[in-house]
Amino acid sequence: MSARLVTITAALMTLAGYALHASPSEARAPSLDDAAGRYDISASSQINFTVGQVGGGGISGKFAKFSGTFQLDGRDIRKSVVEFALFPEAVQTGESRIEDFLRSSAVFDSANHPKIVFRSTKITQTGDDTARIEGKLTAKGTTRTEHFDAKLTKWNRRNISFHIQGGVYRTRYNMSVGTPIYSNIVQFDMIVNGQKH
Image 1 (spheres, rainbow, N blue to C red):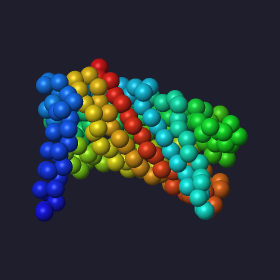
Image 2: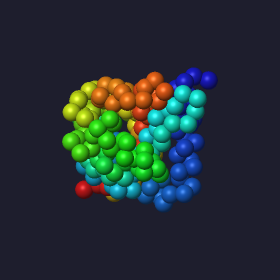
Image 3: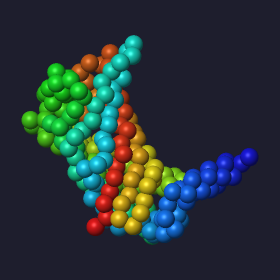
Image 4: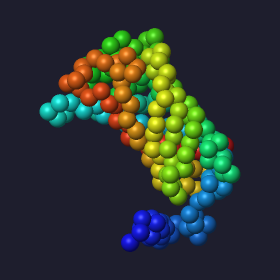
């Protein structure tokens, strides 16, 4: 079976399952035209991260405070723009000792750098419901180019959701403490929900 046929079959199966649980007005797959518009990233989003450790374990956590918008261009996805900010002071791991360490000058230095900011510079559609987002990430006074993969998971006339994943090398942002025992790569796994203006 060709890769194209597999993609089409998977898409049809997904739509069939969606149609069983959706109203007639929602049963149709959204096009970029449908989803076009400006969205505020809502507080219901989940910004999770993990840092692996040699021998297992590591650090897992989330950011409880964030903000941002995305503007989807229905005619040309390449003209879409994502802007996002994380607030390191609101990092949560379930252990106050680790949280204090992450906020310290050894890692985020949240007292002097209260925000981590990402702004897209290029968005490339990679499938019917997927895209690669390239942009500038600024953390701890350093700006680098990063990439994230996004998948559209839910949409209606007012709300939209994406599953976004990507890895960031922390040594590029002057956060090398703990390497190589702790992985240099911070893996992000995010559910980003947007509410349309």
